[in-house]
Image 1 (tube, rainbow, N blue to C red):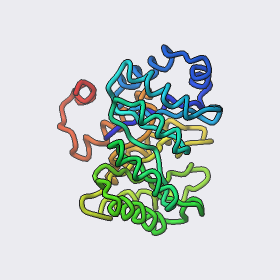
Image 2: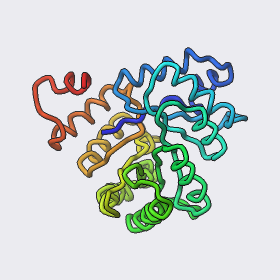
Image 3: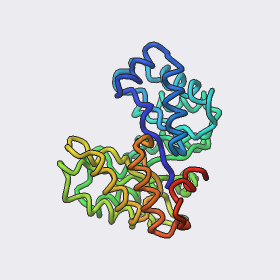
Image 4: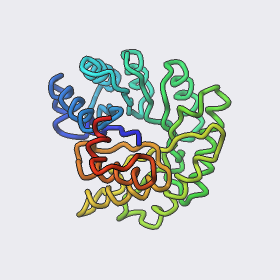
Length: 262
């Protein structure tokens, strides 16, 4: 599983303060803590309070890459902020994210090609969240086709089926698991799959339990990557164990420690 740490996000009050005060140490500690807990990449998001995302994003990029060469996932709805971050980046990058809307694809796919970045594609468009699995597949296919037409390598594309909170879209969760399975056969080579895991538990009492249960189910459906909180040790242990049970890791009594040391 490719783990993308979610915690450097301006929607958290501590990160919003760090951005406002330009507190490098606070951001760098979050980066190193997540990497130490098993993150393979770090999501960077200025958050809704940022008045100058095209300034704050490169500051986040430069701040984090001072202490790590880990992949950076530039998370913004504003292409100007994404490109400003890409220009500042020395680390490998991923863009989070485009939708299936032509206007977004026409901007973000060429941007990913120009900067040799990976790309997350959300299976949605301007009409909103898809109603069912078939709509998700149709939108995902639109994203794949746009990437192929533009010459973007599909192996660097991560498709997100749009995970809904269980207390809002309970019936859709089974369709999302089916979509994860079927996204992989849209093309050859196959795109990868990713979810923003914390979405599934928003507004619920037992957030940790809901996250762990869904992550195990998604691993069994073939999920490749997840944006999550790597500091949640129980969640990470669940992921490691689920991959073990899917025969993706070799069993030994100390498999948890062995996975963390790899």
